[in-house]
Length: 512
Image (cartoon, rainbow, N blue to C red):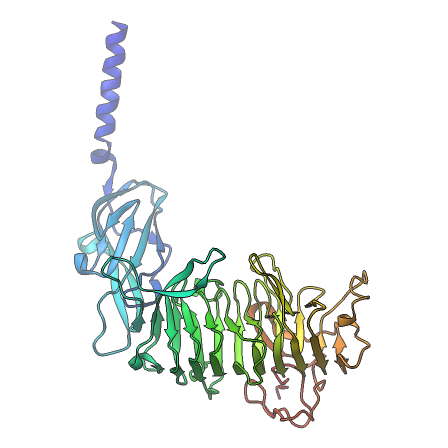
């Protein structure tokens, strides 16, 4: 008899539980609350999926409710996708929500229809909760941009087109997904942004030219290779509205959401291969792995890279990495990086004037200084090779950062090491005299350090956000030599440097 009673009790419990929804859930009466009035999915390119956005739905009443309908206003034709409490789809019926409880709605979109009339437009839809007069609505808004997509072809065997970067120590080819730009792809304009998948290579004896206002977005593990005999020309201009930067050229990743705006390592690098060249004006390179790599032969008397009024920052490794190259830079900012702001390796020739090299990296541990120079390289197969550092001239420059020592020099005595700093502001605080016997750091030697000051505050505007303009109490004010040849009469923003120039890329401008 006891067993029969137990079985009977369990049966009643199961029956009562199975009917609980019918008896205890009331239809939603339109009193749901939402974490957002409108869900903005930020900006996306056509054919590239958005991040996942979240809407939280609250039932603040004392009753369990059943939401008759949750879905998109445009139904199955919508370009939005939903996940409601773990279920994927676009429309859902009879969604339960307990009293004083909440549920999550996750929203994504991919807009795979190319606009025909505009390069960008707002795509809208709405999330509907309930039915009839009790329907509640949450708008969805996305800015969709059309773009020019450049990518490697898929070959007949199903693999992607590749480029050869060189050989590994065993003599095997090192390949990356990539493609050579065709003749009609060698002029980038501001009409539409460009989105590059893989590495776009500039062939020998051709020039890739970018007009003012060009925007180039790189997918993960993507970039530009300029092959031997090729050239890159960036013709950015100073914008009338300096906050909008509409005439500047910008290289960055292809994720446009605000959470990616300062995310390093989103793409690969711009790589000038040995025997190539570049002339760059008003360019910003940000959020790459290595911002700009330049390979030289250590011998060229002409610059492989001419860099003017350019910013490179937020690289996962180095912002500017030279391997025996000849680089001329003026009014350049090399900002925060996980490695070095500028790394000049295996010798080379460097002439930097009115530049700011400043590293305040705060995305984890930093493994380099603002400036690093050496005159050798090591290879597992070839051992140590040396090459002259023919010149490393830094005139009217700021070399600073969050570390006590922001210069790193390593010389192999088998090759020359010629460095020179004139009218510079440098951070180098060596309280333990670790470097006192190294002649490269003999700050009293006027043949290496002339009219330069150490450890005084440059008073940057917002250094951790890569904003390196200087304030009224900066030690860089009036520190520069005005008699350099050729004279540089304007700063990176077009402000006059006359009559008493400041050191670094920016002139201090006192607000009246």
